[in-house]
Length: 280
Image (cartoon, rainbow, N blue to C red; front, side, top):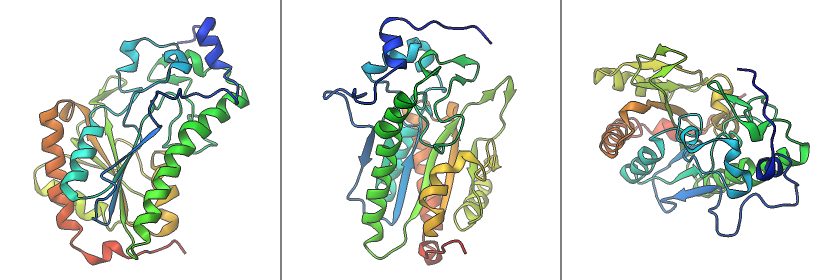
């Protein structure tokens, strides 16, 4: 799809946002939510794509409500699973509160998909021809603020003298580009197998179809948040992807939070999970 868009009015203003002009109004929510911060379990849940929120200053990014409800704007269902799982484990969670179409917090600042101009065939008009100042304003307001919250909570947990595990929560579409995805859940990981290997084994023992670094790989940019926060500190970590049609209702989200809570709790009984193993 190569149709060109001409930005006018509020949309043109948002695309050329001045770095000194705030992207969030005083009555709009912070770009992150810290949930169950007092949770004592040595596990931090992070949810990079929890929300489809777009502030007024960005004029809906030039998209309609139908597009902003699609998976391109957020990971459908996973925020509810994350909060319920935090309650089940007694763990804190940090969730984003902005659409991944504004900027993707699970991408590095040098990644070409950081501010996506195209997502699953949908052109994002307000993301085209952004000035350096406009891009930097999004980085500071959303990306850095979210990761700053993760760091703050993580450092508070580490001050208790125990190396917490980090679990990154995501969801994926049942079909992508016309291809059905058979997995009910995907476990993404890089080099540290302490959490992902037993997690996959236990989930398969329940009869689930589990993807090992499917439908994405934790060894590339899809694992950015863990690459930045977990790996340099040597913290046990895993990225969990749940298929969206299984968690797009309250009932489904609650069922999967309970299943994951029960499974993770058994694995977290292993004290070696909480040993810091920095990369050599």
